[in-house]
Image (tube, rainbow, N blue to C red; front, side):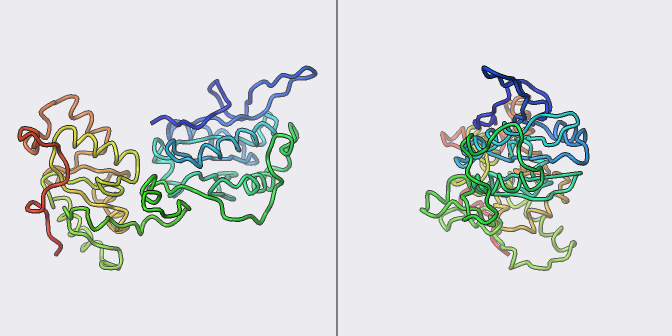
Length: 335
């Protein structure tokens, strides 16, 4: 998934190298926001920064409307800082879903999120699109810009105390708006399926199994992965996927006519965290067949590309139907 957020840099390379800015009187090299597209690239970039350099790490998602505004804010703010050698400040951006390993490390649950890091340690963070707050925390840790005037560039004065700014949950792109709820940031681990969604696996909440031992959790997970012949552990539900990868996985299974069960990991944090260790697979969605892990979206696509008959035994396409969650008669019932 490619981010639709505008970026000012047109050439690859560390953000601190900047891009030449010309005027009728002078030229100045200023910072730009550099897109990072992989975990390795992120690690290489941050490792190369001196301990005194402030790294401004921007997590976004292309479907989140507030990210468009934050992208403009950071592009403008970056242009007011000069590039230097050694660098004083570096601006990078990451698609939170595409570079999910990095997002997991920074516990990203909503976007836009701006994390400030120095010497490998997080020193501050801002969610939402409050330009005053972003400017304040950057100037607090990096000092005032010297390559441009943020006010003349259109940024509001830096303010320490600001009103809450809107943010979009990384795991909830659209459903809150569909319900008429606010789209502000929140703890989406408490999200639960609608009553109309079919229960294709035993539904639990964290409170109902609070304090389960590792043995009990392992036993429960062993049952869950076999709750249906094909089980999808996803963010959200098939009718309302809460991340791009889950949405695409549902689309692939539907297109191939596969009948499957599902479990919304956002409704149960014990399952969400426990399944990572159980399957030795750190990200979601996860697809299981006969209780055995197949993998995530990329692996699922590769399996269908290499074998068009993959999961044919679980297909209902021959009956002239589309795939989707299993019918009530095939559902696993709560214990």
